[in-house]
Image 1 (cartoon, rainbow, N blue to C red):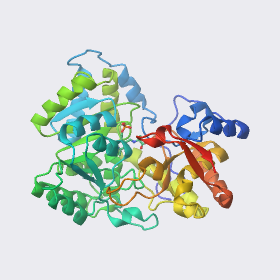
Image 2 (image 1 turned 120 degrees about the vertical axis):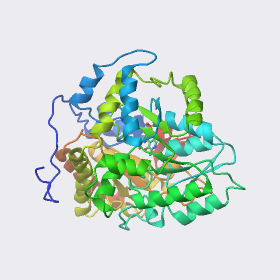
Image 3 (image 1 turned 90 degrees about the vertical axis):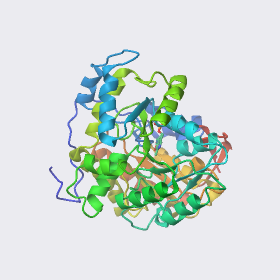
Length: 460
Ligand code: F0G
């Protein structure tokens, strides 16, 4: 592929544009008034107020011509749609799990799995829970605990697989399961809460052996499994010649099932699933599915969405696509680091995470520095990002060390070009130059659950 030999060059987009969507350019005054109207919470901005939207990589992908064509094959049958069959075959082939239960997105899949497995008093270890995963464990009376390796908490420490599980900490929870039952172990691929970092195959093998020995099932949160497999191919000895599909199967063979938000590595705007080996559990999940989502051959989705997902899940495994995707993240990180601003290292799979403690060292934790920085990035250049830190995770006593304070610049798949990313880097560096003037914020409205979505703030 052009440029692939030069690490300095911006990554060459392996696609060309067929449909365009205009980018809004709100003025500085318009951005300022949008911030006030939004209560300084970037979730309250409208898309017309945002220049480059890096709030999330979830459901924001550009679909391919093949996916749009797949939508036209929608067979909108309530029961037994052929789109379901294509979707089911695809997920079975990728994961090897026999029972495939569609859901409208990741948290719906989590609701099905956790409400079936987790009881009050249970403990659920995960390298790091994402916010919805954590909330579903708590919602069912369980206690989520994070068991990532120590390196995962150190933004500047280089490690090829910073998403790995700390095996000794996991073993300690498994050993204590008589007092505090462990209904499942989960591993998040890649670790979104800790910089989008991958987990190695070697670590997954060890986790699987510990869980099996304890008789506890192992599940993956597989939202970004293809990006995780790409890092394994790049970094794990003996994997350089293996395809993403092969590496994926090596991963899934170690687990009992998975939940997926296909809004990430499924390259669709909506969709997800639970996939499991256990037939009895699958029957239970399907009963729940019918109650909350819909019949098992559509799971709360239009059947055409299942067809688009079947195509997207395969496209997400293409090396040309993944090389560009992960290359975009690395390029943006390089541009920011070259200007002197601190990012979480190494760059992850789906976004660049700013290292807030080093970006705004003059702010105290109760100044909510991550949110303050996200506000400034919007104010400066209309770039929308998200705080992944104290507000998203709040204080979680007993859940393991608090995740690091980060601002995530999530890159939507196949949406932005290298020149857009250069603009983002310039915006970050303009804020970096005036960092000493940045003040903290205080929360004026704190919702009880998932606070970052609906909280309101004001400048201090
Ligand atoms: N698990 C992980 C690791 C996630 O990153 C997400 C969503 C979910 C589960 C839930 O999936 O949104 O389809 O219900 N992450 C998005 C993000 C929202 O911005 O990182 P969902």
